[in-house]
Image 1 (cartoon, rainbow, N blue to C red):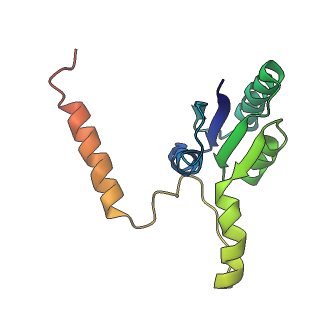
Image 2: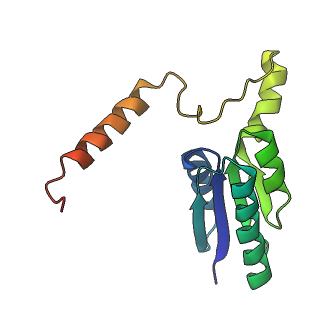
Length: 137
């Protein structure tokens, strides 16, 4: 039997997936995962918690919920699900605010924008490969 895992984000969910996979790779069990990106509205967040709660009702086991949600209103909705919440961004933001002596200024979809030229180059290369794929129908 596998454990259900949800990766939820108000962006692409890449950060939640990468962190979640790194953590879960430490455990020798199977995980059934579902990635839910672009949860940017309260309506979408309510649908997500419905999915998470349905999983709990169906399996009797609280699903793992890894998220990287910047919007506090959306994050609070997700916190109210029956899953076990692991909030990657806020786990690190509060201690860093203390250490740096400044408040974070959360901006949605900025997690990959930290002056990262290699990320932009990689995205451009992927887009080029997809646009020039010989096997395209």
